[in-house]
Image (cartoon, rainbow, N blue to C red):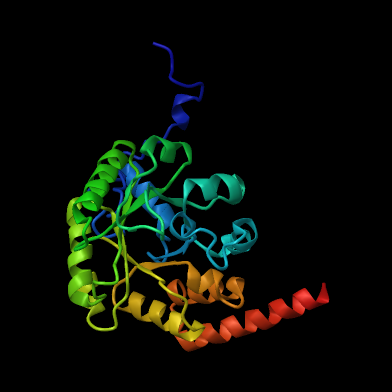
Length: 302
């Protein structure tokens, strides 16, 4: 029988006395039992060194149209790409505005069906998972209105997205959408995040609450990232990031608090310093102000 390769037999080394190295346990909670492909995608989303993520949300247009700061996504988002871990966006924005060579993983907004002019909780799945595969999505996502009038519909959307995503090893992000009538307290957020996890989502996006957020995070067996929400003063936004990760969140999915900042490029780097670098909000604000000043000098020199 011919040799399997042309190398001389005496050069082969099977290291028969060295035990085979086992793959270590996966570093993200609730993910160890998943298939290799899904864990690989999660490792693109959550930095393996810090275990955390800075996601940039700019999917606002599917509800609000040309949101302030996103009137021109090609001008607003491209300068931020080097400083974020993940892009959270719609397929239209991705195809039309984001260069494929940027190399950033994408969490693809996969729900829609209403705008700010109508009842926003009345959603459907608007993107087929096979299109997410064509777009090389690292994850898919939809909103869930726990306690809302359309709770049943959005939980059904979540279930369908999880089921279809698992066929391809694509993780699902469940987003807790809170209407005006629901309080963003630990009792509600704990309920909503736990429900999403129990349905089989692989990570969850929710809001930060000042009281007992650590209990929300502890009661959710999958990674939590926090939403930035409405625009806050820079120091307040950085404090929210810091407090959330100190209390169990594994990152942020921020939009308006970055692209509506006076200097978005400086702000995203300050957020990154908090999430990945463990900086205090005050030191991160100093970084923001320094980068902002340097940016103005550079623009003036041009």
